Length: 171
Image 1 (tube, rainbow, N blue to C red):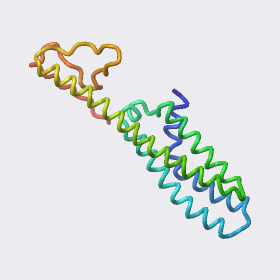
Image 2 (cartoon, rainbow, N blue to C red; image 1 turned 90 degrees about the vertical axis):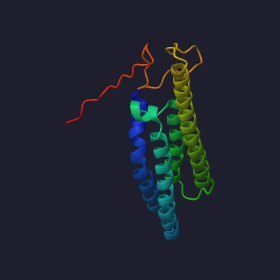
Image 3 (cartoon, rainbow, N blue to C red; image 1 turned 30 degrees about the horizontal axis):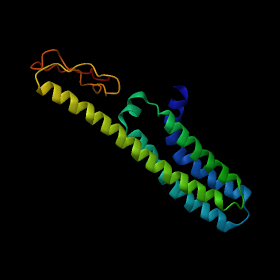
Image 4 (cartoon, rainbow, N blue to C red; image 1 turned 120 degrees about the horizontal axis):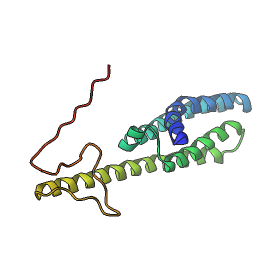
């Protein structure tokens, strides 16, 4: 859980740190001024891509509740961020920035898919809860492979009773 929480925080820091590293790495390891200028504009685009992926991960309810990304998210972020760091060290490898872009696009679509799958499973659990409540019986415990009730939607034994729980104000 510690590693997942570190990546949860790191993904937002990486939006600033990794593009800055590209600029510093280009100035230290490349001699051409055009390469530094290209790294500057590439870093801006990279920062926007990192921000988009981080926000898509953050949009998932379970990520926000646990304040930790999933292990699959950790793997995708590790690969992408390692390639970005490595591209700051290379002087003339034209294939590495291309690989960073391809992995970045894959990370973006992976984040969209994870958000879709998370929303779909929560919606299915909510539909099951509504369907069971509409039938007049208390929802049964989910069988193996079924989705449990979403957090905050615990059914009561009597469907005509509505229980509203208040959270205390944070002061």
